[in-house]
Image (tube, rainbow, N blue to C red):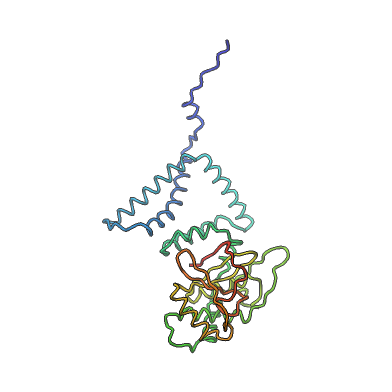
Length: 310
């Protein structure tokens, strides 16, 4: 009778486990990176208990970190393998100058900064998870702090609707509509090269006011944001277009009156104002290059992704 050696399963399990202390350090760092945005979301959505020294928030941070650490430790072998692969991808991206360590660091810092200053930080996470073509390139191209972009936007506000009085609460929106009028009056649609998408920066598009839908959206978003407006880009079927945050339904009534009776009387006569209402009940109005007035007809109704610029 053949006797098989007795297998000590606890000892085997111990041998299979990673002995290096680096696995704990790696998981600890990863847990911390995940804890920070999760904590910001909880901080903004949970009731402040007014504990001394904000101890309730300290306990929340520690609790989230500990829970994530132990969960990730359970899957540490798979996670470490994924991290190694991801680091190799980032290294390759850094070498070819596409998307590497510098870009991911900037994206993470930007996300945390934006979340900390937003009453709905979870929306930032959702926006980053939504599918959006060339998202990183488009964000980088929206140069709203470029002096050329801001100077153009300011010039537009002095050229259009400067004499409109009595709507101080909607001054920023009126000025953004002036930007819309200036860009759309001058825009010349030109296709990208056949080889693929060409993403022009906002300052680049200012030279000839020409390009395709994403170039127009980038310039519109940059100019609108440079003077205090809140734009977002919508991805739909083979098309990208800009929208501007109007506010509540009450604000929509006021802006609707402005468009039809003060700012774009001829262009909007007998026409419908087109807009979207997001999950927060906020109204966003169409600023596409195909529109002759803010809130003009959509090219496509379906929204496949949204990129909000806070």
